[in-house]
Image (cartoon, rainbow, N blue to C red; front, side, top):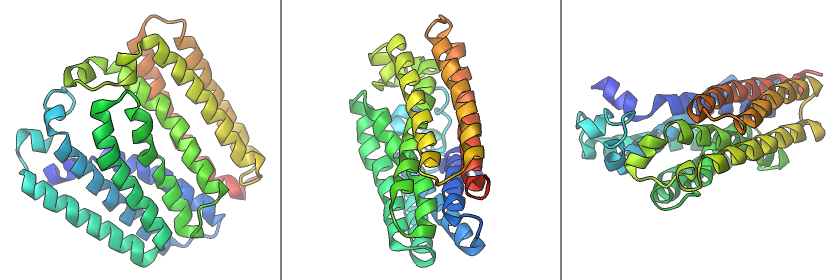
Length: 284
């Protein structure tokens, strides 16, 4: 039963967001680490993300039942009841909010709760109704590094905005790639994702455009001297490899294999970015 509740929080999403939140925190810290604040930020944010994921599971029970990768989730199989899941989500949100409110600052708490609202309410409605649901969902996915950064600085400045923009540009190719290689599942669930509605070729072109946006936005962190040349060199190298892979996809007919490759490489990209913004301020 404990494993079922753990699964309900979508731990993969929590870990991925914790990585970018840590990057934002270390970027703001610039080599002077308050580990108590770091642990509080990470645990509080993880609770709020877990809460959002449980609420998402509650709202998407009908969709999850139609997709192979989600049909065995605890609420679909009824291992956990709806009332118990709802109580669990409330407890997580209260716990996370209390930790962030007490140990960080009100701005950090507000931004984290804004992410929860967009993921559960705005994206929850949009994913069933509009082809633009991916960009709407990316708003909540771009929140964690901003939370990490603002927990240290207690201000939303240009760096916070750039972190938000970078994560938007990274997520779009990441999720469009998923939409391509899992399009049959989304079709079965009746979700109007971009690759289904607008077509594969258009989706592949949009992926390339967003990768270019990612390259520009990661460069701006160095252009404004928030990080150094080591960060810039690493991110430009990895970003250009990602771009070349994207451009190659415009010529390939094997969409599924290409999309999987783009997806897995996007994980390398975001890991490298999180590491480089963590150490970027203390490197040349």
